[in-house]
Length: 45
Image (cartoon, rainbow, N blue to C red):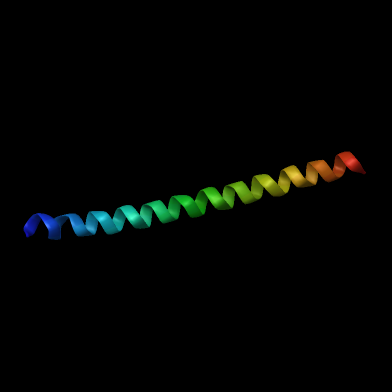
């Protein structure tokens, strides 16, 4: 029982960390994608 209780906060922290990292990657990718699109637009102009 104690083991289960001890692993719960670690599990929650892991989920939060995972969500946060996914969010960061998404933000970075969005920035990179917009930069790529801007470069593509400049090529066509």
